[in-house]
Length: 385
Image (cartoon, rainbow, N blue to C red; front, side, top):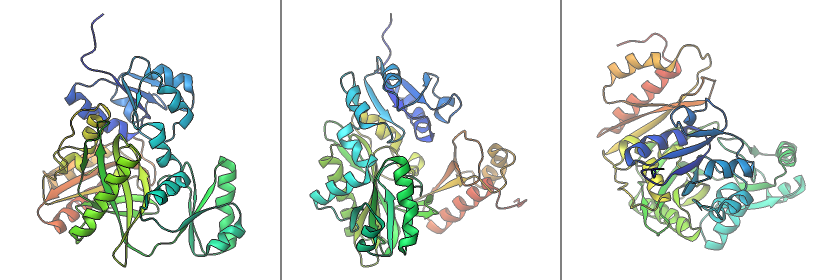
């Protein structure tokens, strides 16, 4: 039986992040095998070698990883004990001892405190009375399972705290209280790290969130001092090294009004705030994630242009027609526009794609990217040019 052209990489999770790993994997001649949630999910449409199953089932995980050299992830929800069990058969990257810090916010906060990494004031709370003692206003988060604004509550009084405890009890997790930070904007520091310890840091970016969902990213963050940018990159590199992260690590930060950075969240996989790298960096976050988990030399994270703007395409309030139908106008208006669709059904507020625009004029990049994303969403009516 002939040997495969390269070691096979297993990817757990069939969302758009796994889908966007496929293109650099093809270029690198790297076979991918996917565990998908359904036969038609985003990544299953473009990765032929896929199995449909439940990532919470260890036997299913063993089936999809059999014969693979490495396993990596589209999301962070695989049970930690299952990851430890898989380590007997192949390399798990990032490993369970690292990944738990992205899975469990309480574990993450405790470890970052040990490392002296700047974070918002926080505490695990077990009752509404403990939230009152922590102080209002504050932010309550379930320690596991939340994303895109889910599992997060901003509370100003005791009566508003009950929803968080009800959700946590139903999910069998804890509640974390954090101070409500007075911040100027949100930043993201993205790094790649290989098992051999090589690391690469992308420019620090500014992100805009609406209702907990990332709407747009500007790379690099405008008007960010070199000192604060360097501090953010050093924080990300230190966390990656201390936690022994393999692959992409995204460190989401608050830039406070008094000129500091505080760590908000960690993600140990390609991240929405790194989608700009597909067209705006020498090596995309998706390629560098593959390089890192396969322990190949990392590619340059340097930007290709002065500015790159990424805007997410979200499903509009009335989702009729096809995203494809928006291409003639968008492409004719802007021949330099880069469009990335995820193969997802249109639903209100759902991330179904993104656009990237790069150039030397930030205002021009912002206008072009916002116009294209709004056109695909259906917010511009019958405008034509």
